[in-house]
Amino acid sequence: MTSAGGNPQPGRRVPALSVSEQAHTAGRVKDHGMTVEFSWPGVYFEGRFRGTGLGVVLDCAAADYDVQVDGTTVATLVTPGDTTHWIGGLRDGEHTVRVVRRNDTPGDTSTFGGFVAAPGGTVLGRPAPRDRQIEFIGDSLTMGYGNVSGTRACDPEQLRRTTNSDVSHGALTARQLDADYQINGLSGLGMVRNVAGICPDVTYRTYYDRALLNVDGDVWQNPGTWRPQVVVVNLGSNDFSDLTPGEAWTPDSLAAAYRTAYGEFLRELRTRNGAGTLLVAVGFDRNAEHVRQVVEARNDAGDSGVHYWYLDQSGLDFLGCDGHTSAHDDRVIADRLAPFLRSLPTGW
Image (cartoon, rainbow, N blue to C red; front, side, top):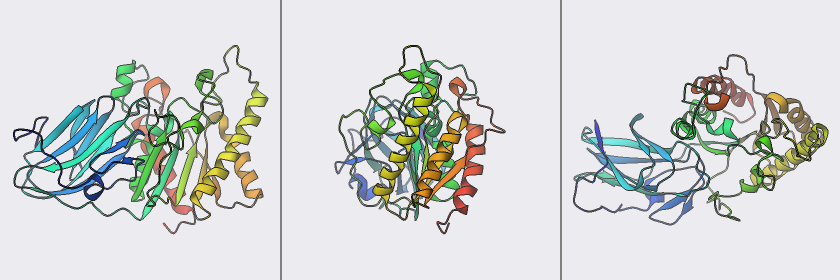
């Protein structure tokens, strides 16, 4: 099996089908017919084709992508730019293809233009969606910050190349449960306060509604196919990072504001998703007791569909960039989270 970045035919071939006709995705995208735009990490596109090769049409100068054929990664595209990347040398027959955005570049918009078959081949209709859907909401821990680095000491370039949302604990948990998923993670942001007090005028909630993170006021339009049975929220590590001189917060005022905002966010998620969706609030490190109290308050208010899950740090090596969870840790967390989600009243 070989891969090549150049088109095997003169000129650039155009996909015969629209992106939505040929590719399945559960990610937040803006659909323009023959192209879709997206920003969140971990967005993936799955397709089927018959033949000996396939072109992947992308326009992105900021993020990295893995291309997987028949379940095996055959290419990693580093900031590919405006290109059709060709995968060739396949046995002549029917294949599956998956293209996934590895990292977060919230200041940039990416464009996917679908698949084109090599000469003699055909792009087939999109695969069927999975019956199960999970949304993961969080920060750098959720989106796999530097998780494949193997070291805590990373420069910005190493961080970009070694962040892989496709092996984050959310993606691994979803695969264990055969679920489609969204990884709606933003590094550095919190519920009411960001890491080290940066950017005090915005928080994670400023961006949550968006499809395109760098477009002020953008709102993702759910096509009606995204109805997650479970939403997992893990926000708070940045809120409770060490206070810096000059910040107006005190430990008590920060904790109170965090609990209030978290409760409001859970109510917003309930309104957005309806009564049938289970909400899982994750307690981690300094935020654990506050999250537990918020869940109790929601339960006391009559919402029995809100659940608390404690992210146990035992057995984690934190060998990702800047002391974040590693790919090893993501596997450990997924092996603990998946059974918990199975235990909930979802019928899974």
